[in-house]
Length: 65
Image (cartoon, rainbow, N blue to C red; front, side, top):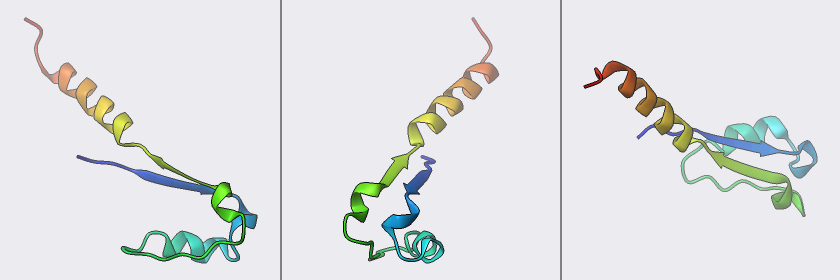
């Protein structure tokens, strides 16, 4: 199953936004944020949208009976 994860954060949640973006993509990452920063970070998994798109494309390829 394909999926996509988007991490959206406010710049003041971390010391270095570029380093945060790089580090958060590492496996088994431990990434520091500023105090109160966790409430300024949102993770969105987009696998459901990809599944729906795949199903729609499969329906287009299947001839109607």
